[in-house]
Length: 241
Image 1 (tube, rainbow, N blue to C red):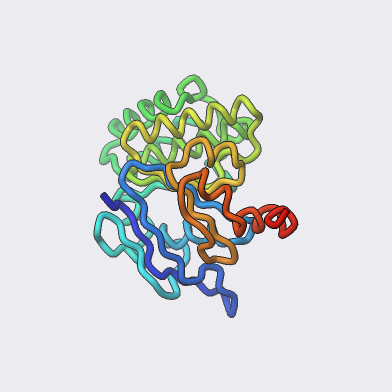
Image 2 (cartoon, one colour; image 1 turned 60 degrees about the vertical axis):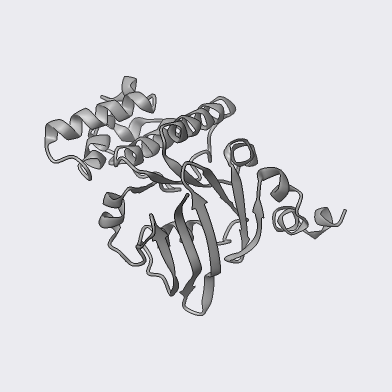
Protein backbone atom coordinates (compact mmCIF):
# COMPACT_ATOMS: atom_id res chain seq x y z
CA UNK A 1 0.00 0.00 0.00
CA UNK A 2 1.34 3.43 -0.98
CA UNK A 3 1.45 5.69 2.08
CA UNK A 4 3.31 8.64 0.59
CA UNK A 5 4.07 9.98 -2.87
CA UNK A 6 5.69 12.99 -4.50
CA UNK A 7 4.86 13.72 -8.14
CA UNK A 8 6.96 15.90 -10.46
CA UNK A 9 8.24 17.98 -7.54
CA UNK A 10 10.08 21.17 -8.49
CA UNK A 11 11.65 23.81 -6.25
CA UNK A 12 13.47 26.86 -7.58
CA UNK A 13 15.53 29.21 -5.43
CA UNK A 14 15.90 32.21 -7.71
CA UNK A 15 17.03 30.71 -11.01
CA UNK A 16 18.43 27.54 -9.46
CA UNK A 17 16.42 24.29 -9.49
CA UNK A 18 17.20 22.65 -6.13
CA UNK A 19 14.63 19.92 -6.85
CA UNK A 20 13.86 19.19 -10.49
CA UNK A 21 10.90 17.01 -11.55
CA UNK A 22 11.31 14.47 -8.74
CA UNK A 23 8.82 11.61 -8.26
CA UNK A 24 8.82 8.66 -5.85
CA UNK A 25 6.45 6.49 -3.82
CA UNK A 26 6.90 5.11 -0.31
CA UNK A 27 5.11 1.94 0.78
CA UNK A 28 3.55 1.68 4.22
CA UNK A 29 5.98 0.34 6.86
CA UNK A 30 9.11 0.47 4.70
CA UNK A 31 12.37 2.28 5.30
CA UNK A 32 13.01 4.39 2.21
CA UNK A 33 16.51 5.79 1.86
CA UNK A 34 17.15 9.09 0.09
CA UNK A 35 20.79 9.52 -0.90
CA UNK A 36 22.87 11.95 -2.91
CA UNK A 37 26.00 14.08 -2.63
CA UNK A 38 26.04 17.31 -0.60
CA UNK A 39 23.85 19.94 -2.21
CA UNK A 40 21.80 17.41 -4.20
CA UNK A 41 18.49 18.58 -2.69
CA UNK A 42 17.76 16.01 0.02
CA UNK A 43 17.03 18.37 2.92
CA UNK A 44 15.14 20.67 0.53
CA UNK A 45 12.81 17.73 -0.22
CA UNK A 46 12.12 17.32 3.52
CA UNK A 47 11.51 21.07 3.80
CA UNK A 48 9.00 20.89 0.94
CA UNK A 49 7.21 17.89 2.50
CA UNK A 50 6.86 19.67 5.84
CA UNK A 51 6.02 23.05 4.22
CA UNK A 52 9.07 24.95 5.46
CA UNK A 53 9.53 25.86 1.79
CA UNK A 54 6.77 26.40 -0.75
CA UNK A 55 6.65 24.01 -3.68
CA UNK A 56 7.30 25.67 -7.08
CA UNK A 57 5.32 22.95 -8.87
CA UNK A 58 4.34 19.31 -8.44
CA UNK A 59 2.35 17.63 -5.67
CA UNK A 60 2.86 15.78 -2.37
CA UNK A 61 0.37 13.09 -1.35
CA UNK A 62 -0.05 11.38 2.04
CA UNK A 63 -2.60 8.60 2.53
CA UNK A 64 -4.08 9.50 -0.83
CA UNK A 65 -4.63 13.14 0.12
CA UNK A 66 -2.90 16.08 -1.56
CA UNK A 67 -1.03 17.87 1.27
CA UNK A 68 1.01 20.24 -0.93
CA UNK A 69 1.33 23.62 0.79
CA UNK A 70 -0.61 22.74 3.94
CA UNK A 71 0.58 24.53 7.09
CA UNK A 72 3.49 22.83 8.89
CA UNK A 73 1.56 22.18 12.12
CA UNK A 74 -1.31 20.59 10.16
CA UNK A 75 1.11 18.24 8.41
CA UNK A 76 2.51 17.27 11.82
CA UNK A 77 -0.99 16.65 13.20
CA UNK A 78 -1.78 14.43 10.21
CA UNK A 79 1.05 12.12 11.27
CA UNK A 80 4.26 13.27 9.54
CA UNK A 81 7.13 13.88 11.95
CA UNK A 82 10.67 14.93 11.17
CA UNK A 83 14.11 15.52 12.61
CA UNK A 84 16.56 18.23 11.58
CA UNK A 85 20.11 17.85 10.33
CA UNK A 86 21.31 20.59 12.71
CA UNK A 87 19.86 19.62 16.08
CA UNK A 88 18.54 22.56 18.09
CA UNK A 89 16.95 21.37 21.31
CA UNK A 90 15.33 23.88 23.67
CA UNK A 91 18.72 24.26 25.31
CA UNK A 92 17.74 25.63 28.72
CA UNK A 93 14.97 23.11 29.29
CA UNK A 94 15.34 19.57 30.55
CA UNK A 95 15.24 16.62 28.19
CA UNK A 96 11.78 15.76 29.55
CA UNK A 97 10.43 19.29 28.96
CA UNK A 98 11.77 19.21 25.39
CA UNK A 99 9.77 16.06 24.71
CA UNK A 100 6.67 17.39 26.52
CA UNK A 101 6.73 20.42 24.22
CA UNK A 102 6.66 18.09 21.19
CA UNK A 103 3.94 15.89 22.71
CA UNK A 104 1.57 18.89 22.90
CA UNK A 105 1.07 18.51 19.14
CA UNK A 106 -1.19 15.55 19.98
CA UNK A 107 -1.89 15.85 23.73
CA UNK A 108 -4.70 18.04 25.05
CA UNK A 109 -3.59 18.30 28.72
CA UNK A 110 -0.28 18.75 30.51
CA UNK A 111 -0.74 15.41 32.26
CA UNK A 112 -1.32 13.64 28.93
CA UNK A 113 1.70 15.38 27.34
CA UNK A 114 3.91 14.33 30.27
CA UNK A 115 2.74 10.71 30.09
CA UNK A 116 3.37 10.63 26.34
CA UNK A 117 6.81 12.21 26.81
CA UNK A 118 7.87 9.73 29.51
CA UNK A 119 6.68 6.79 27.42
CA UNK A 120 8.57 8.08 24.35
CA UNK A 121 11.76 8.70 26.36
CA UNK A 122 11.58 5.12 27.62
CA UNK A 123 11.04 3.78 24.10
CA UNK A 124 13.97 5.79 22.68
CA UNK A 125 16.35 4.92 25.52
CA UNK A 126 16.67 8.40 27.02
CA UNK A 127 14.54 8.03 30.17
CA UNK A 128 17.65 8.00 32.39
CA UNK A 129 18.55 11.48 31.06
CA UNK A 130 15.12 13.09 31.48
CA UNK A 131 16.21 15.63 34.13
CA UNK A 132 19.37 16.74 32.32
CA UNK A 133 19.44 20.22 30.74
CA UNK A 134 19.30 19.60 26.98
CA UNK A 135 22.23 21.84 25.98
CA UNK A 136 24.60 19.80 28.18
CA UNK A 137 23.97 16.56 26.26
CA UNK A 138 26.79 15.21 24.06
CA UNK A 139 26.07 15.10 20.30
CA UNK A 140 25.01 11.43 20.28
CA UNK A 141 22.33 12.03 22.89
CA UNK A 142 21.24 15.30 21.26
CA UNK A 143 20.63 13.34 18.06
CA UNK A 144 18.64 10.77 20.06
CA UNK A 145 16.64 13.57 21.71
CA UNK A 146 15.84 14.91 18.24
CA UNK A 147 14.38 11.51 17.27
CA UNK A 148 12.55 11.30 20.62
CA UNK A 149 10.94 14.71 20.08
CA UNK A 150 9.80 13.67 16.60
CA UNK A 151 8.42 10.38 17.96
CA UNK A 152 6.48 12.27 20.67
CA UNK A 153 4.32 13.75 17.88
CA UNK A 154 3.09 10.16 17.23
CA UNK A 155 4.05 10.04 13.55
CA UNK A 156 2.96 7.39 11.07
CA UNK A 157 5.60 8.71 8.67
CA UNK A 158 8.96 9.84 10.09
CA UNK A 159 11.50 11.88 8.11
CA UNK A 160 15.01 11.36 9.50
CA UNK A 161 17.60 13.91 8.32
CA UNK A 162 21.17 12.69 8.89
CA UNK A 163 20.55 11.38 12.39
CA UNK A 164 23.78 9.37 12.31
CA UNK A 165 26.17 12.22 11.43
CA UNK A 166 28.82 12.79 14.10
CA UNK A 167 28.19 9.52 15.95
CA UNK A 168 30.95 7.15 17.05
CA UNK A 169 30.79 3.46 15.97
CA UNK A 170 28.88 2.22 19.03
CA UNK A 171 26.41 5.13 18.83
CA UNK A 172 25.99 4.32 15.14
CA UNK A 173 24.98 0.74 15.97
CA UNK A 174 22.57 2.04 18.63
CA UNK A 175 21.04 4.47 16.11
CA UNK A 176 20.50 1.64 13.60
CA UNK A 177 18.78 -0.44 16.30
CA UNK A 178 16.54 2.47 17.30
CA UNK A 179 15.49 3.10 13.69
CA UNK A 180 14.65 -0.61 13.27
CA UNK A 181 12.68 -0.49 16.53
CA UNK A 182 10.71 2.54 15.29
CA UNK A 183 9.83 0.71 12.06
CA UNK A 184 8.80 -2.38 14.08
CA UNK A 185 6.35 -0.11 15.89
CA UNK A 186 4.59 0.43 12.54
CA UNK A 187 6.16 3.76 11.58
CA UNK A 188 7.13 4.28 7.94
CA UNK A 189 10.51 6.01 7.56
CA UNK A 190 12.15 8.17 4.89
CA UNK A 191 15.81 8.59 5.82
CA UNK A 192 18.39 11.00 4.41
CA UNK A 193 21.85 9.76 5.33
CA UNK A 194 25.45 10.08 4.15
CA UNK A 195 26.81 7.19 6.19
CA UNK A 196 26.48 4.25 3.83
CA UNK A 197 26.64 1.65 6.61
CA UNK A 198 23.37 3.04 7.99
CA UNK A 199 21.52 3.43 4.70
CA UNK A 200 22.62 0.06 3.31
CA UNK A 201 21.84 -1.80 6.55
CA UNK A 202 18.32 -0.56 7.13
CA UNK A 203 16.74 0.59 3.85
CA UNK A 204 14.27 -1.57 1.95
CA UNK A 205 14.66 0.66 -1.10
CA UNK A 206 16.95 3.56 -1.95
CA UNK A 207 16.26 6.57 -4.17
CA UNK A 208 19.45 8.30 -5.34
CA UNK A 209 19.42 11.90 -6.52
CA UNK A 210 21.94 14.37 -7.88
CA UNK A 211 21.32 18.04 -8.76
CA UNK A 212 17.73 17.58 -7.55
CA UNK A 213 16.97 14.82 -10.07
CA UNK A 214 16.56 11.05 -9.80
CA UNK A 215 19.57 9.02 -10.93
CA UNK A 216 18.53 5.60 -9.58
CA UNK A 217 16.07 3.67 -7.45
CA UNK A 218 16.10 0.10 -6.19
CA UNK A 219 17.29 -2.16 -3.40
CA UNK A 220 20.52 -1.15 -1.61
CA UNK A 221 22.43 -3.81 -3.58
CA UNK A 222 21.04 -2.64 -6.92
CA UNK A 223 21.67 1.05 -6.30
CA UNK A 224 25.21 0.48 -4.98
CA UNK A 225 26.21 -1.05 -8.32
CA UNK A 226 24.76 1.62 -10.64
CA UNK A 227 27.59 3.63 -12.32
CA UNK A 228 25.70 6.95 -12.08
CA UNK A 229 25.45 6.54 -8.29
CA UNK A 230 29.12 5.59 -7.92
CA UNK A 231 30.08 8.55 -10.10
CA UNK A 232 27.96 11.00 -8.08
CA UNK A 233 29.62 9.88 -4.85
CA UNK A 234 33.16 8.96 -5.86
CA UNK A 235 33.80 10.63 -9.21
CA UNK A 236 33.95 9.43 -12.79
CA UNK A 237 37.16 7.41 -12.41
CA UNK A 238 35.52 5.00 -9.95
CA UNK A 239 32.41 4.57 -12.09
CA UNK A 240 34.41 3.53 -15.13
CA UNK A 241 37.27 1.79 -13.39
